[in-house]
Length: 238
Image (cartoon, rainbow, N blue to C red; front, side):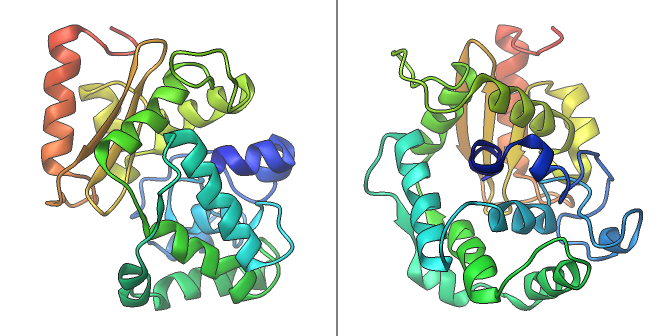
């Protein structure tokens, strides 16, 4: 969603609503919003930042916003069947994210209604795909924004650079620094246990292991990535 928002409104607009710094706080922390610039998330990779970024995706209303998000994922993964899991959407605990949304709206970081801006975020977090889909998305970033095996550009080079930089510095929540030292490739974790990882110019990875560590990152996924990058010397600063 960071990539889509950057393509829609540009970096200046995006980073007037969300920061670019790793704060080392939990992904769902509301305390981070009370520190520094009031109401502004520290980076796009935590819940509050993701909510703010999703709200910037251009659309007339919430239904169109989610449709654009879903179609963007389908295009990047080259899978027209990707959609959100309705049971997951209904079952998700929404109150904390509502609190984040309303706190940011109170400070002018986001605007509009919950239906138009927050519900698309809930559906986005319920998008369902497999590891191959996730790896294909990662491969687009690894290929500089072009579809793997072709010159068809799906994401601008500038957007790829920004997203990969923020994945490297903030993509693994408060474990990002340790992960960057020990694994050393741009990666983004989800509390589903999924990890999307990118070796620029080489390959993309999609992994899932539901058991999480204290930061919300997949225990098995991190171990697998560590072994793979060591075996083939894939670290960005290798």
